[in-house]
Image 1 (cartoon, one colour):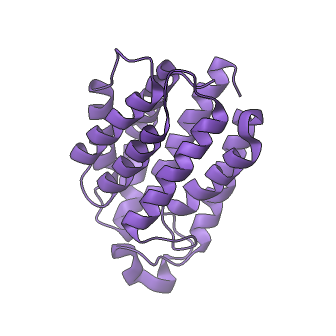
Image 2 (cartoon, helix red, strand yellow):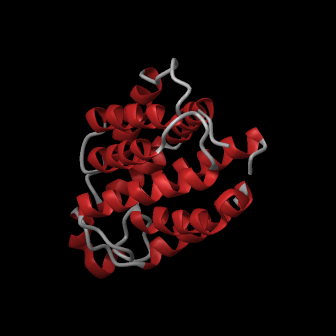
Image 3 (cartoon, one colour):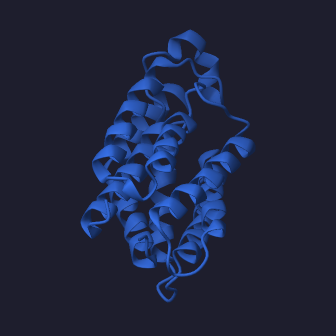
Length: 206
């Protein structure tokens, strides 16, 4: 089961991890991008926590509101992408009784919408390279998903991101030189997935 309270804890945990790793995200983004990813993500998730829907028992509504907050507060390219992920995912979840398999399906819709909005595919050194393999695992395991499996897949995907040549955004200017470096968006996505795993583990669901 994935509850509204778990959704709220997911966002709170994500905000903590992103803030505590703000400097790392900034350093990664300075190497290949604008250098503002750490600051933007910290500001966006802090706002999302402050504006969390504490009244509803529906996880979909929580995630939808988070998407709206992120869309308005995260600057750069990441705001629309993270906003899209949570808004589209939230739209797919109805009612208070949500299974892990439902969450997986909803996140698939969210990631597909991100890909469309960012015109991104796999192996272009973006957050898609982190999120899509994780979603595929979630779809495969359904309600049998464990937090350990989730973390292992996220770590594996994050390592692969470094191998790719950047094809999107400012990072694309570096071409071959981008290989071996980590993408800031993939790294922040890792923290979001790591936070989800922590919440599932704490609740005894995974």
